Length: 76
Image (cartoon, rainbow, N blue to C red; front, top):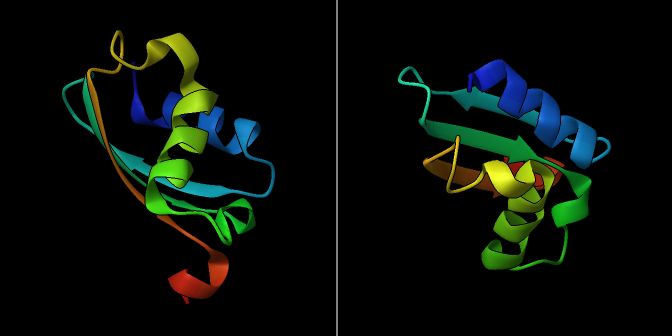
C-alpha cells in the first residue's frame, strides 16, 4: 500500500474532499482530510467516514491510519 493510493481512495469516496497522506513503511500512515461533508459531525463520525472509503484495507493492508479531519473553514 502507498500514500498516493490511499489519498485517491479517500478523495474518490468523499466527493469534494482534499487529502494529504504520508507514510513510508507501507502499513502506517497519517492523513489530513479536508471535506465539507464533515460539517456538523463529531470527530468519531468524521473518522468513520474516512475509514468507510478504505473498506477492508483498514486493519489489513493499512495497519494504522492517524487522521486529522477538518472542514474547509476549520482548515483556513
